[in-house]
Length: 183
Image 1 (cartoon, rainbow, N blue to C red):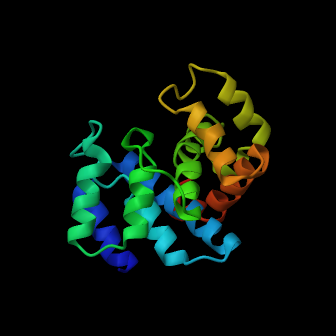
Image 2: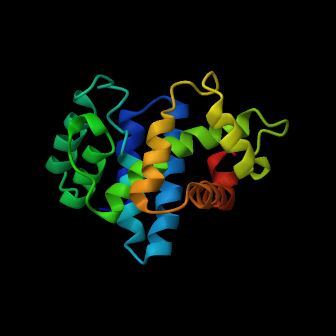
């Protein structure tokens, strides 16, 4: 398992640039959390990078992420990664027991929401996004309506971190890698 192979797999299966960017953002946030919690940055990062790699070909539940998990298993990716990826989709009923699984769930929807918040800023940069503006936009049901507010709130709770701190942590993670992420 290495990032270059994972990136090639993601790019082979995902042509949509927005979805690719999303997976890169989740990778970034998970690498930051791995460092914070003292876990394997490569495992966590690759989990974020591949969590939606099958979505473009299998967008319907439960195909995503079940079919992707089978592909990852065939390619020899670790069980911990596959369980975390299965758990990020609540409808699979795979419990999020590991810190990796909880972190993936907590970062997935939030990363997408923060990117949406950055795109409505005049400069379109994540460096302009603040926790207060994210929380204000969370209350606006019409803004980024496909993002689950419930998953964002539950993700922070499952991770046992304050929502404001979690939002700030993810913003900071994305800021640190903003150039590569196009943010």
